Length: 153
Image (cartoon, rainbow, N blue to C red; front, side, top):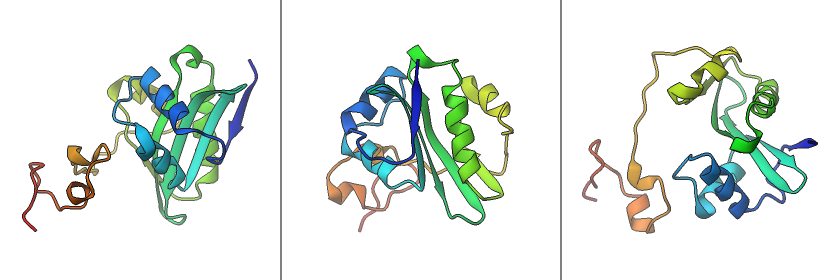
């Protein structure tokens, strides 16, 4: 297997990202929105086996203090071969900040611990499930209450 790595979104098709995320059961990543998420990221790393997209990862950063890594995914047929580790090492090596955060399900936290990550209790999140998928513009941009309902405008 000859894995190559790419650090731009050039020639990465939306359908390839969708297929990769579907294969790994990372639901909610679909359509043009998934491609925009990668295109709008500060850093990306894609793994290819020939013409097959087998891995993807991305990070957002201010370039000075903070970064967040998102959507680290490796096709199940290629997992446990060092591809995820290599993508993470590539992202971390390009992030010149002192704090890098990521969100990881409990089942993969051991993987990230081996890369130097640890639990960090001072993190909060605000989730608005209505914005997970593309929708009508009037819904996407309306402020939401903490219970997920719409605020009157």
